[in-house]
Length: 503
Image (cartoon, one colour):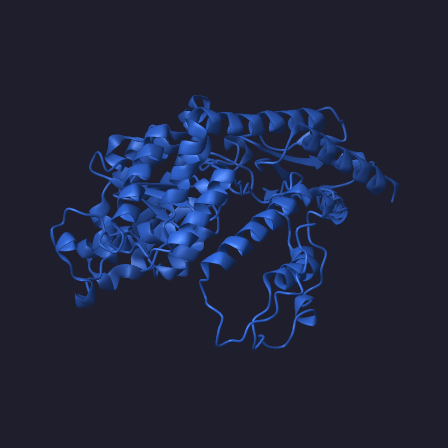
């Protein structure tokens, strides 16, 4: 990073004379920082994608206490380059295919700059009217792009809010569902409430259920099978609910998923809602990973049945190029949220809130303070437009199809589950390791294959368990990734497979 040049004449200032917001220094250091980050992206492929540092490495590199006197930004950035970057797993590397996309963009980055620059704390309308009103507008925009029913939009009777992460969104909806149910049956019966999901559902649901006070034994992780492509079976849900009712328990909450974290499975919303609604169950749809793709007409069918659910969330910071954090949550009955989450201390009383004509987003979330996230999403939607955002996603799907074809073209490998969106789940078949290799051994060898691929530093992928099968996941969605990176990733896998076979 050539932008880091130490200036001897810029000596450390006295703690008594330095200003925390000197505008000339802000301008100068801002330019330095932009250059530093641009250089980082320019050179990102030279770094191992997966950091290879050992636990505790950083404490050995840094002083035991904070400096008493100020240090120059150039010195600090030199330490970032020397000590911090080696400990980063490079999520924006075009060779990062692990976990899920955490896509960024120029507009998303600039939006983050505005968020930090304004640094408003928009907990209520009066605390920053533009922050509240822009959020309401941009959530309606995105809802319209997804063709959500009007009941989820402020222009209808619903509304949307930007949370930090999926766990927060699910926790808010479970709390709303819990309080709505307990108001009918009595709060002392909380131990009877039951939460349902598939065994492919993200663990954020289980965490949220724990925090909301759901008894751990009342969390139903319903087994999925290959026959449904590991989607939640309506018949299995019906059986689970019926048994709980027979046992004197009370069905409360169902979380269906559009694009499960492990394998991108898609639960059938309509049939699941038909069963859930027979028993007054709140239905939430977690579309954190793949929901953004439903702005594309060819993927919108995955949301069929959305008109029957109570709440819906997706992470724009995953596949809508809106830098972390930006979890979008819509509800068709905002009062269910606000009844559970509202507090009205006297020191926040104001005429606007008392008029009931404004939104106070503090009552739509767990935390009190909140960032001006809407301006970031607004910049992304305006800077690229719907057509370009769709094309970005389609390019990733096209690359995933190319990777899938490469896997299928090598008889030593197989695609384990149907590809949805831009993720391919694959493995080396047992016979590739030799005659008589059984499932357990094949799983261990595939795990070893993945470890060696990641240790190369050239590519980073992660795994999932599907049934009893260990699969390697190639999740495509980084803004810098091109076809050549996908081809390179496959070559690394093949070369490593050759090594495994010879061992």
